[in-house]
Image 1 (cartoon, rainbow over the protein chains, first blue to last red):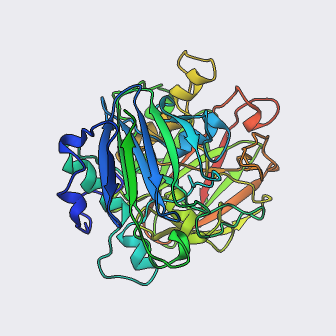
Image 2: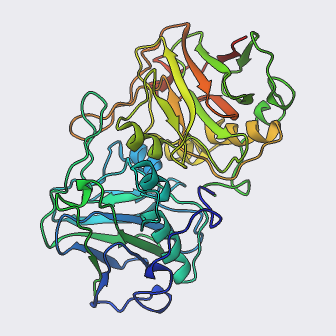
Length: 225
Length: 225
């Protein structure tokens, strides 16, 4: 397990509030994931989830787990060789650590700038950046959001960082830029198998990763009716 | 846990043979990790390990765990943001999932082409590539090598793939190329803290990743005396 609950856990409402009981959303209803927090919800095979950056320039750390066995989850390092690309595009399958499709990306209204290279922020990251006091972070948001719907997990997979703009350069360096997503941009994902999805509104306010104003915002989720 | 022992486990001598009892190597002695297999060994704080591609063009899947707590390990997705680069170079720290240095790269006589993007091969990968029968693989080699020195692990972190030539292109695609390492190229790594290191000689023979001859070879390890 990457980090267990014996680690520092920075609690926020992700631990106690849910979008809907047991993560069962009502199709067609728009739910908001509050700024700096994370929420988990279930998506049945064939259903389509729409994740919307309604205010724009907000990174969403995203994970998905097989509902049957949460030890199977989207894995960026397994997805990259199957797709032979850094980042999935519409039409691509999203691949698990068992090399199987769990989701399919149907549509992406943004310019397609997302990240698969960078770990979720965690308390250790804020400490590293000069903020040793407790800080909301996506790793804790994931653990709390999953536990809050009764589906606790052990390890923290590398997230699919929606709208995050950290491209590798030709010289091997990585840039750290504000998102290029516009307000209202969304990604549509179809479940190939029953899945649990988690979206964390990245609370990073020490870099421009959530826009030059460094102001973390919320995101929206909807299951299409 | 990424993949537990309940998964298909393709056994080879990695499960039963060790370089030295409990992974305690004799400094100054050169040990060979056989082709298609993996071995684990211990490196104390301050010691330097030399990993040598003595025949050239062989990929080495490499991992390191904190000897104190194996839940702390080198993590490619945590190393990239700390270094702000895809791949470490001499002088760089190798970073764990707790954002701390575990090793330091002192020297690299190869052109520095290594990979941090691609998961270790596993039985699922060979099945995906059209080889459903049991095949040696680096994920199982890691689990077996650690268990063989009495240090079993749960999950399979993304490896640091030494000499592996899978560069991302400017268009976001990933190329799959033969190594550019020469026979005798080595990497020297210093332990910042007590560590357990694992090197698996990648048994991939369905792509040119281990050279155009698609012939997996061995690798050598030595702790400097």
